[in-house]
Amino acid sequence: MVNNLESFKDIYPFDSHFFNLNPYKYHYIDEGEGEVLLFLHGNPTWSFYYRNLIQSFQNKYRCIAPDHIGCGFSDKPQNYNYTLSTHIDNLEQLVDSLGLKDITLVMHDWGGSIGMGLAVRQPKLIKRLVLFNTAAFLSLNIPFRIELCRKPVIGLLAIRCFNMFVGGVLRFGIKHKDILTEQVRSGYLLPYNTFKNRIGNLRFVQDIPMNSSVQSYSVLENIENNLNLFSKLPILITWGGKDFCFNGKFLDKWREIFPIAEIHVIDSAGHLVVEDSTKEVIERMRVFLGENKIY
Image 1 (cartoon, rainbow, N blue to C red):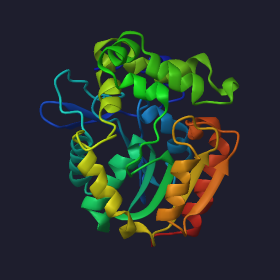
Image 2 (image 1 turned 60 degrees about the vertical axis):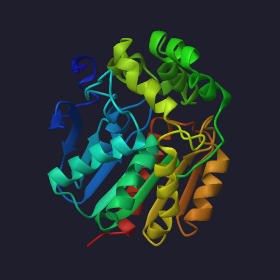
Image 3 (image 1 turned 45 degrees about the horizontal axis):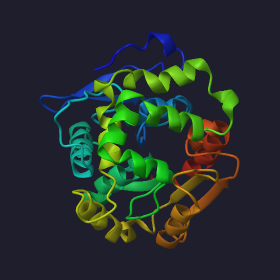
């Protein structure tokens, strides 16, 4: 486990909490009080991705942001069942242990499948949805460069040996390069600084359910089949229009599933839309939460 925050503590000024998954430590941020905003990151980011949102909303809301096992400051076991179902299990245990209810799910990338997996299991807990360039349904629409990383030898070399997955996301997922300061870049890279610490990055890619032979295929299929349970909830979708991975086809699918969702496309933003367009994302979310109160 990596645990060296000093180099960027000023931009990630949160206390670390660890939930015992026995024998593994599951890291999460828990800041503020009030209605629960549950921030779920994807691959290969971590709770650092949501740092600006947490700082903006922690004075009014309880902001919780876990690092999935294999990510961030959570443990990174080398022999572990890194599957969608396991990540949902871990999240559900954390939510139950903290007694969370009336939850607003805030989801990006793989966080969408994990978060909606929790929602399908415990729909009464969920009151609002906020989505950023994500999916929670089956799709064959995968970029060629990510498909290459699913191949055993190429994936091992590219992701674990040369850290090209994290580097690639930072290079291609952010369109406003001026915001990617050395400090911010270092923050994204720090948890994935060794071959061993990049195990989760590879396993997430290998777990993409492209066909029914992948263990997570049936899990994601079940999630997709139950998304209609949430179609009447307040839903905000803010989308980076220049995403090389979750492109317009994914957004069209969300429009089909959630036809009454509030949707904003930020044409100049990439996959890491929260990083690319922080101020607009925060303002859209602030208005949405204010107009769709739980109580």
